[in-house]
Image (cartoon, rainbow over all chains, first blue to last red; front, side, top):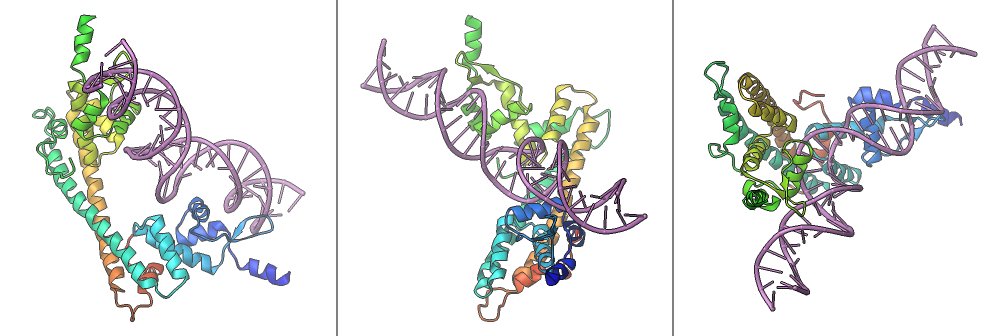
Length: 149
Length: 149
DNA sequence: TATACGATCTCTAGCCACTTCAGGTTCAAG
DNA sequence: CTTGAACCTGAAGTGGCTAGAGATCGTATA
Protein backbone atom coordinates (compact mmCIF):
# COMPACT_ATOMS: atom_id res chain seq x y z
CA UNK A 1 0.00 0.00 0.00
CA UNK A 2 2.66 2.44 1.12
CA UNK A 3 4.95 1.22 -1.64
CA UNK A 4 2.28 1.54 -4.27
CA UNK A 5 1.53 5.08 -3.20
CA UNK A 6 5.21 5.93 -3.18
CA UNK A 7 5.68 4.48 -6.65
CA UNK A 8 2.72 6.36 -7.97
CA UNK A 9 4.08 9.51 -6.39
CA UNK A 10 7.07 9.72 -8.66
CA UNK A 11 5.06 9.05 -11.78
CA UNK A 12 3.80 11.89 -13.94
CA UNK A 13 0.45 12.56 -15.61
CA UNK A 14 0.08 12.69 -19.35
CA UNK A 15 0.37 16.47 -19.59
CA UNK A 16 3.83 16.49 -18.05
CA UNK A 17 4.94 13.70 -20.34
CA UNK A 18 3.66 15.76 -23.23
CA UNK A 19 5.67 18.81 -22.16
CA UNK A 20 8.79 16.75 -21.54
CA UNK A 21 8.76 15.00 -24.88
CA UNK A 22 7.12 17.61 -27.07
CA UNK A 23 4.42 15.14 -28.09
CA UNK A 24 0.83 16.28 -27.74
CA UNK A 25 -1.42 14.69 -25.16
CA UNK A 26 -3.84 13.41 -27.79
CA UNK A 27 -0.98 11.95 -29.79
CA UNK A 28 0.32 10.10 -26.75
CA UNK A 29 -3.09 8.54 -26.22
CA UNK A 30 -3.17 7.69 -29.90
CA UNK A 31 0.21 5.96 -29.69
CA UNK A 32 -1.10 3.91 -26.81
CA UNK A 33 -4.19 3.04 -28.78
CA UNK A 34 -2.22 1.76 -31.76
CA UNK A 35 0.20 -0.14 -29.58
CA UNK A 36 3.34 1.96 -29.85
CA UNK A 37 3.26 2.81 -26.17
CA UNK A 38 2.39 0.22 -23.52
CA UNK A 39 -0.57 0.94 -21.29
CA UNK A 40 0.68 2.89 -18.29
CA UNK A 41 -0.39 2.55 -14.68
CA UNK A 42 -3.42 4.51 -13.63
CA UNK A 43 -4.17 6.70 -10.64
CA UNK A 44 -7.10 5.80 -8.41
CA UNK A 45 -9.17 8.17 -10.49
CA UNK A 46 -8.21 6.32 -13.68
CA UNK A 47 -5.69 8.83 -14.99
CA UNK A 48 -2.53 7.71 -16.76
CA UNK A 49 0.72 7.84 -14.78
CA UNK A 50 4.02 7.57 -16.60
CA UNK A 51 7.54 6.71 -15.48
CA UNK A 52 11.06 6.89 -16.84
CA UNK A 53 10.67 4.01 -19.27
CA UNK A 54 7.76 5.72 -20.92
CA UNK A 55 9.66 8.95 -21.38
CA UNK A 56 12.47 7.12 -23.12
CA UNK A 57 10.23 5.09 -25.33
CA UNK A 58 8.23 8.11 -26.34
CA UNK A 59 11.40 10.07 -27.07
CA UNK A 60 12.49 7.25 -29.32
CA UNK A 61 9.17 7.32 -31.12
CA UNK A 62 9.22 11.06 -31.52
CA UNK A 63 12.72 11.08 -32.89
CA UNK A 64 11.91 8.39 -35.39
CA UNK A 65 8.70 10.18 -36.45
CA UNK A 66 10.64 13.41 -36.85
CA UNK A 67 12.90 11.47 -39.15
CA UNK A 68 9.84 10.47 -41.13
CA UNK A 69 9.80 6.79 -40.23
CA UNK A 70 6.29 5.42 -40.73
CA UNK A 71 4.54 4.09 -37.66
CA UNK A 72 4.92 0.51 -38.85
CA UNK A 73 8.66 0.97 -39.22
CA UNK A 74 8.83 2.34 -35.71
CA UNK A 75 6.85 -0.57 -34.41
CA UNK A 76 9.39 -2.89 -36.00
CA UNK A 77 12.32 -0.96 -34.54
CA UNK A 78 10.71 -1.02 -31.12
CA UNK A 79 10.18 -4.75 -31.35
CA UNK A 80 13.87 -5.13 -32.18
CA UNK A 81 14.98 -2.96 -29.30
CA UNK A 82 12.77 -4.95 -26.95
CA UNK A 83 14.45 -8.24 -27.68
CA UNK A 84 18.10 -7.47 -28.42
CA UNK A 85 20.52 -9.64 -30.33
CA UNK A 86 19.99 -10.43 -34.01
CA UNK A 87 18.40 -6.99 -34.26
CA UNK A 88 21.06 -5.13 -36.10
CA UNK A 89 20.65 -6.44 -39.62
CA UNK A 90 17.00 -5.75 -39.61
CA UNK A 91 17.32 -2.32 -38.07
CA UNK A 92 19.91 -1.48 -40.66
CA UNK A 93 17.63 -2.62 -43.43
CA UNK A 94 14.77 -0.50 -42.16
CA UNK A 95 16.98 2.56 -41.94
CA UNK A 96 18.48 2.09 -45.36
CA UNK A 97 15.08 1.56 -46.93
CA UNK A 98 13.92 4.74 -45.33
CA UNK A 99 16.99 6.60 -46.48
CA UNK A 100 16.29 5.48 -50.02
CA UNK A 101 12.81 6.83 -49.77
CA UNK A 102 14.00 10.16 -48.46
CA UNK A 103 16.45 10.45 -51.33
CA UNK A 104 13.70 9.66 -53.79
CA UNK A 105 11.56 12.39 -52.36
CA UNK A 106 14.42 14.86 -52.55
CA UNK A 107 15.02 14.06 -56.20
CA UNK A 108 11.40 14.46 -57.00
CA UNK A 109 11.02 17.70 -55.09
CA UNK A 110 14.05 19.12 -56.89
CA UNK A 111 12.41 18.68 -60.27
CA UNK A 112 9.22 20.16 -58.89
CA UNK A 113 11.25 23.12 -57.73
CA UNK A 114 12.70 23.62 -61.18
CA UNK A 115 9.36 23.54 -62.83
CA UNK A 116 7.68 25.76 -60.30
CA UNK A 117 10.46 28.26 -60.80
CA UNK A 118 9.80 28.19 -64.50
CA UNK A 119 6.08 28.62 -63.98
CA UNK A 120 6.40 31.38 -61.43
CA UNK A 121 8.92 33.19 -63.61
CA UNK A 122 6.49 33.09 -66.53
CA UNK A 123 4.67 35.91 -64.85
CA UNK A 124 6.84 37.57 -62.30
CA UNK A 125 4.61 40.46 -61.41
CA UNK A 126 4.22 42.79 -64.36
CA UNK A 127 0.54 43.61 -64.24
CA UNK A 128 0.25 44.81 -67.80
CA UNK A 129 2.21 42.27 -69.76
CA UNK A 130 0.71 39.23 -68.12
CA UNK A 131 -2.29 37.34 -69.38
CA UNK A 132 -1.68 34.79 -67.57
CA UNK A 133 1.17 32.42 -68.36
CA UNK A 134 1.00 30.58 -65.11
CA UNK A 135 -2.32 29.07 -65.91
CA UNK A 136 -1.22 28.29 -69.44
CA UNK A 137 1.90 26.63 -68.12
CA UNK A 138 -0.11 24.51 -65.74
CA UNK A 139 -2.53 23.56 -68.47
CA UNK A 140 0.26 22.45 -70.75
CA UNK A 141 2.06 19.36 -69.63
CA UNK A 142 4.17 19.08 -72.75
CA UNK A 143 6.77 21.64 -71.71
CA UNK A 144 7.62 20.12 -68.43
CA UNK A 145 10.33 17.76 -67.41
CA UNK A 146 8.34 15.74 -64.95
CA UNK A 147 8.62 12.03 -65.28
CA UNK A 148 5.34 10.80 -63.95
CA UNK A 149 2.86 11.70 -66.65
CA UNK B 1 -33.58 15.03 -80.22
CA UNK B 2 -31.30 14.38 -83.14
CA UNK B 3 -28.97 17.15 -82.03
CA UNK B 4 -28.84 15.91 -78.51
CA UNK B 5 -28.02 12.43 -79.67
CA UNK B 6 -25.34 13.73 -82.02
CA UNK B 7 -23.73 15.76 -79.26
CA UNK B 8 -23.74 12.84 -76.93
CA UNK B 9 -22.18 10.71 -79.63
CA UNK B 10 -18.89 12.51 -79.60
CA UNK B 11 -18.61 12.51 -75.84
CA UNK B 12 -16.61 9.87 -74.03
CA UNK B 13 -17.35 7.74 -70.99
CA UNK B 14 -15.34 8.05 -67.82
CA UNK B 15 -13.00 5.15 -68.60
CA UNK B 16 -11.75 6.78 -71.79
CA UNK B 17 -11.23 10.05 -69.99
CA UNK B 18 -9.24 8.15 -67.39
CA UNK B 19 -7.01 6.58 -70.03
CA UNK B 20 -6.53 9.87 -71.86
CA UNK B 21 -5.54 11.85 -68.81
CA UNK B 22 -3.89 9.21 -66.70
CA UNK B 23 -6.26 9.90 -63.84
CA UNK B 24 -8.08 6.92 -62.34
CA UNK B 25 -11.81 6.56 -62.76
CA UNK B 26 -12.44 6.74 -59.04
CA UNK B 27 -10.30 9.84 -58.74
CA UNK B 28 -12.26 11.56 -61.50
CA UNK B 29 -15.48 10.87 -59.67
CA UNK B 30 -13.85 12.12 -56.51
CA UNK B 31 -12.81 15.37 -58.20
CA UNK B 32 -16.38 15.85 -59.30
CA UNK B 33 -17.59 15.20 -55.80
CA UNK B 34 -15.32 17.82 -54.26
CA UNK B 35 -16.12 20.35 -56.94
CA UNK B 36 -12.92 20.41 -58.98
CA UNK B 37 -14.65 19.04 -62.05
CA UNK B 38 -18.11 20.25 -63.09
CA UNK B 39 -20.85 17.67 -63.36
CA UNK B 40 -20.80 16.24 -66.88
CA UNK B 41 -23.71 15.34 -69.06
CA UNK B 42 -25.17 11.91 -68.61
CA UNK B 43 -26.23 9.20 -71.02
CA UNK B 44 -29.80 7.97 -70.95
CA UNK B 45 -28.60 5.22 -68.66
CA UNK B 46 -27.12 7.81 -66.27
CA UNK B 47 -23.47 7.31 -67.20
CA UNK B 48 -21.10 10.29 -67.32
CA UNK B 49 -20.19 11.63 -70.77
CA UNK B 50 -17.21 13.95 -71.11
CA UNK B 51 -16.16 16.39 -73.81
CA UNK B 52 -13.09 18.40 -74.75
CA UNK B 53 -13.46 20.97 -71.97
CA UNK B 54 -13.40 18.23 -69.39
CA UNK B 55 -10.23 16.72 -70.79
CA UNK B 56 -8.46 20.04 -70.59
CA UNK B 57 -9.65 20.85 -67.13
CA UNK B 58 -8.67 17.44 -65.85
CA UNK B 59 -5.24 17.69 -67.48
CA UNK B 60 -4.77 21.00 -65.70
CA UNK B 61 -5.75 19.44 -62.40
CA UNK B 62 -3.48 16.46 -62.90
CA UNK B 63 -0.52 18.59 -63.78
CA UNK B 64 -1.03 20.79 -60.76
CA UNK B 65 -1.45 17.75 -58.50
CA UNK B 66 1.73 16.23 -59.95
CA UNK B 67 3.40 19.48 -58.97
CA UNK B 68 2.10 18.95 -55.47
CA UNK B 69 -0.40 21.80 -55.37
CA UNK B 70 -2.99 21.10 -52.70
CA UNK B 71 -6.55 20.71 -53.90
CA UNK B 72 -7.54 24.05 -52.40
CA UNK B 73 -4.79 25.79 -54.33
CA UNK B 74 -5.97 24.13 -57.51
CA UNK B 75 -9.49 25.22 -56.82
CA UNK B 76 -8.26 28.78 -56.52
CA UNK B 77 -6.25 28.53 -59.75
CA UNK B 78 -9.26 27.11 -61.55
CA UNK B 79 -11.43 29.92 -60.30
CA UNK B 80 -8.86 32.35 -61.64
CA UNK B 81 -8.67 30.67 -65.01
CA UNK B 82 -12.44 30.69 -65.23
CA UNK B 83 -12.77 34.45 -64.96
CA UNK B 84 -9.69 35.90 -66.62
CA UNK B 85 -8.24 39.33 -66.06
CA UNK B 86 -6.85 40.34 -62.64
CA UNK B 87 -5.91 36.72 -62.21
CA UNK B 88 -2.19 36.94 -62.67
CA UNK B 89 -1.09 38.44 -59.39
CA UNK B 90 -3.01 35.93 -57.43
CA UNK B 91 -1.88 32.99 -59.54
CA UNK B 92 1.67 34.15 -59.14
CA UNK B 93 1.24 34.39 -55.38
CA UNK B 94 -0.15 30.88 -55.18
CA UNK B 95 2.72 29.48 -57.21
CA UNK B 96 5.38 31.30 -55.26
CA UNK B 97 3.86 30.20 -51.97
CA UNK B 98 3.91 26.64 -53.19
CA UNK B 99 7.48 26.99 -54.40
CA UNK B 100 8.47 28.20 -50.95
CA UNK B 101 6.87 25.18 -49.42
CA UNK B 102 8.65 22.82 -51.78
CA UNK B 103 11.97 24.45 -50.91
CA UNK B 104 11.23 24.08 -47.24
CA UNK B 105 10.55 20.41 -47.70
CA UNK B 106 13.76 19.95 -49.63
CA UNK B 107 15.80 21.62 -46.90
CA UNK B 108 14.18 19.50 -44.26
CA UNK B 109 14.61 16.28 -46.21
CA UNK B 110 18.28 17.07 -46.74
CA UNK B 111 18.93 17.19 -43.04
CA UNK B 112 16.95 14.01 -42.61
CA UNK B 113 19.15 12.44 -45.25
CA UNK B 114 22.29 13.47 -43.40
CA UNK B 115 21.05 12.07 -40.15
CA UNK B 116 19.79 8.86 -41.64
CA UNK B 117 23.17 8.39 -43.29
CA UNK B 118 24.81 8.80 -39.92
CA UNK B 119 22.41 6.37 -38.30
CA UNK B 120 22.66 3.76 -41.03
CA UNK B 121 26.44 4.03 -41.02
CA UNK B 122 26.51 3.42 -37.27
CA UNK B 123 25.95 -0.21 -38.09
CA UNK B 124 26.79 -0.87 -41.67
CA UNK B 125 26.40 -4.60 -41.66
CA UNK B 126 29.21 -6.15 -39.63
CA UNK B 127 27.36 -8.86 -37.76
CA UNK B 128 29.87 -9.29 -34.99
CA UNK B 129 30.76 -5.76 -34.02
CA UNK B 130 27.25 -4.44 -33.87
CA UNK B 131 25.07 -4.26 -30.79
CA UNK B 132 23.02 -2.13 -32.08
CA UNK B 133 23.90 1.49 -32.62
CA UNK B 134 20.93 2.28 -34.79
CA UNK B 135 18.51 1.93 -31.97
CA UNK B 136 20.79 3.85 -29.66
CA UNK B 137 21.08 6.63 -32.21
CA UNK B 138 17.35 6.81 -32.58
CA UNK B 139 16.84 6.88 -28.86
CA UNK B 140 19.25 9.75 -28.44
CA UNK B 141 18.04 13.00 -29.84
CA UNK B 142 20.96 15.01 -28.50
CA UNK B 143 23.36 14.09 -31.30
CA UNK B 144 21.17 15.11 -34.13
CA UNK B 145 21.03 18.33 -36.05
CA UNK B 146 17.30 18.44 -36.51
CA UNK B 147 15.65 21.70 -35.68
CA UNK B 148 12.21 20.66 -34.61
CA UNK B 149 12.64 19.12 -31.19
C1' DT C 1 -32.94 -10.67 -80.78
C1' DA C 2 -30.84 -12.80 -76.88
C1' DT C 3 -26.93 -13.13 -74.11
C1' DA C 4 -22.73 -12.41 -72.07
C1' DC C 5 -19.53 -9.56 -70.01
C1' DG C 6 -16.95 -5.49 -69.24
C1' DA C 7 -17.82 -0.74 -67.96
C1' DT C 8 -20.21 2.15 -65.13
C1' DC C 9 -23.31 3.46 -61.33
C1' DT C 10 -24.05 4.78 -56.06
C1' DC C 11 -22.90 4.28 -51.50
C1' DT C 12 -19.98 3.03 -47.88
C1' DA C 13 -15.87 2.19 -45.57
C1' DG C 14 -10.84 2.17 -45.23
C1' DC C 15 -6.13 4.27 -45.39
C1' DC C 16 -2.41 7.27 -42.40
C1' DA C 17 -1.32 9.80 -38.56
C1' DC C 18 -3.24 12.25 -36.25
C1' DT C 19 -6.71 16.37 -34.55
C1' DT C 20 -10.90 18.02 -32.73
C1' DC C 21 -15.01 17.79 -30.33
C1' DA C 22 -18.60 16.78 -26.73
C1' DG C 23 -19.67 15.73 -22.39
C1' DG C 24 -18.16 14.01 -18.33
C1' DT C 25 -14.58 13.10 -14.10
C1' DT C 26 -10.42 13.96 -11.29
C1' DC C 27 -6.84 16.53 -9.14
C1' DA C 28 -4.52 20.13 -6.76
C1' DA C 29 -4.22 24.94 -5.30
C1' DG C 30 -6.25 28.54 -2.53
C1' DC D 1 -14.75 23.22 0.10
C1' DT D 2 -14.69 25.35 -4.09
C1' DT D 3 -12.88 26.34 -8.31
C1' DG D 4 -10.83 25.54 -12.62
C1' DA D 5 -7.31 23.29 -15.14
C1' DA D 6 -6.14 18.82 -16.43
C1' DC D 7 -7.77 14.55 -17.52
C1' DC D 8 -11.08 10.80 -19.28
C1' DT D 9 -13.71 8.13 -23.27
C1' DG D 10 -15.58 7.63 -27.63
C1' DA D 11 -16.73 9.30 -31.96
C1' DA D 12 -16.09 12.05 -35.91
C1' DG D 13 -13.26 14.91 -39.03
C1' DT D 14 -8.91 15.87 -41.94
C1' DG D 15 -6.78 15.23 -47.05
C1' DG D 16 -6.69 12.82 -51.07
C1' DC D 17 -7.75 9.43 -52.51
C1' DT D 18 -8.58 3.86 -52.87
C1' DA D 19 -11.29 -0.30 -52.57
C1' DG D 20 -15.36 -2.99 -52.27
C1' DA D 21 -20.34 -4.45 -52.67
C1' DG D 22 -24.07 -4.98 -55.36
C1' DA D 23 -26.81 -3.17 -59.03
C1' DT D 24 -27.31 -1.30 -63.81
C1' DC D 25 -25.74 -0.04 -68.53
C1' DG D 26 -23.90 -0.70 -73.14
C1' DT D 27 -22.30 -3.22 -76.87
C1' DA D 28 -20.10 -7.18 -79.45
C1' DT D 29 -21.14 -11.47 -80.82
C1' DA D 30 -24.11 -15.84 -81.66
